Length: 339
Image (cartoon, rainbow, N blue to C red; front, side, top):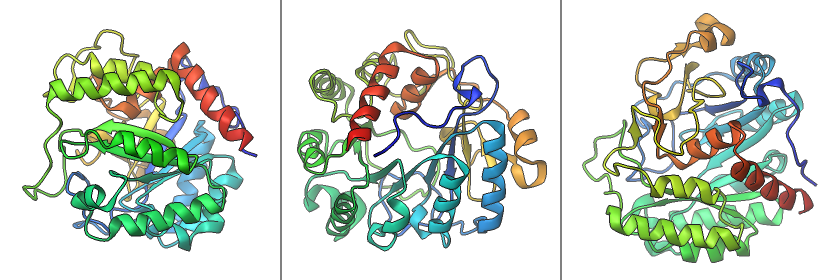
């Protein structure tokens, strides 16, 4: 049985200047080359050894961080991923991990201890999924999903909506229910870094995206298989300029952005950033040189005040104590705790 609420920390309160959520991208390496990915995954191979990673996590725990999201690249390529998961959970972190699912069968004992395993899947069949991720990737991902499901690992499916799969979320919803998974649906964001391959997919045309968002909101009101709150999707729906992912203004209805305050991002070389969107910008603070506390205290906050990234809207709403997001969080957690 999974716990309903992560371990207590004063950083849960919005008026306390302490970080609560750390997104740690352990490695830039990946075993896929997804067309829409904006990571620098084939030009950088540096990553921190286990002992340095453990030391930094201990420092961030002392600062107040309680939720740890492990990502990459593909985090299951990190040499000592099993030991790091074990350490983080023993330390007291609520740990989730984002993966493409392919290597999941090789790490089941460690993954069984996660609060959630998020697996990226863009279609309910090989034709859709493989068109972005490479031939044969769907079959390998499904083997990972099957293995995790048999071990009762709490699953999230992460779907990025593009022009090719804008209707596919309905089929993925069926697949998610089959595996008792939550479905995280996010519109494709504009490319911010990474490979200039020339094949970066186009976002959904605004009119069609609005239609899909309205359908997702209707579904969310009657079924909690969709992970993000209907409030998050409504804010994306009402976004004033679909040609841009972020705004210098705090847009109507949007929560105060807490990136760099409650939510922080650590890259594979120990550089700390306020959020994923500005990681790789050269404006990070190196924790190996400064220590976690000073790196956090001297972070340069982003100039933007709002964005239409679903995960950050949801995080910010929750940490600003929005009733809708808190209710959504508790409903999702309570159902998971009973499984």
